[in-house]
Length: 156
Length: 141
Image 1: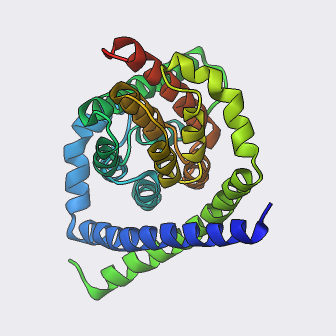
Image 2: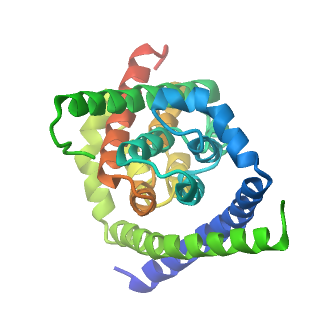
C-alpha cells in the first residue's frame, strides 16, 4: 500500500473539507450570535415551537434543524453546539435532532448533484424526507415507551 | 444590539468549534483512505454485493456506498464509472444520500452530544429500507 498516497489524499481531502467548513461555519455562527443579541433568536425559537413540538424539541433547535436540513450535518452540528448554550437538550432530544438531519440533510446541494447524475430529484427528496420523519418518530415513540415503563433506557 | 463584541464573540466560538471538529475530521478521513488504499474497501464491497440485488442495484454499486463513506464525492465518482438505469440511479442516489460519510459525521455527532452508533445504525437501516421500498414501488427496471 502506498502510504504517501494515503497521506496526501488525507491531507487534500481534510484541507478542502475544513476550508469549506470554516468558510460556512464562521459567518453562520457570527450571524447566530447577532441574532441572539438583537433578540431575534428568541422570537424565532418561540415561533418555531409549534413545529418542533412534534419532535419533542425546543424551539431553539429549529435553527439547527434548518441549517442541517439545507446544508450538511457538520454545519448543522456547529450551530447545534452553539444552541446548546441557550437551551440545554436531553440526550433523547439531541438524538432525535441528529436522526432527522442524518437521514435528510443537504437537500439542496445533494438533490441538484444527483439529479445531474440521472436520479429523479423529486423522488430523492421526498424519500429522504419521509424516511427521516418515519424513523425519527419511531425513535421518539420507542423512547416514550421505554420512559413510561420506568426502566433505565439502554439508548439514552 | 449588535456590537463589535458580538462579531468577535461569534467568531471566537466558531473558531473553537472548527478546531474541535478538526480533531475528528482528519482521523476519520485517514482511516477511510487506509481502507480504500489497502483494498479492504473492495473486499467489503464483495461481501455486500448480494444485498444490492434486494435494492434492484448491480453488485458493483456496493462500491458506491463504500466509497461514499470516504467522501460523498468519492461515491459520486464511483457512480460515474458504472452503468445503471434511471430507476437504479434514483435508488442509488437516495441510499447514498441517507448513508454517506457516516464515520466522519458520526464523530461530529458524538462531539455534539448525541449517540453516534445509534445514528449510524438507524441511517443504515433507513437507507436499506428506503432503497427496498423504492425498488418495489418505482416502475421500470
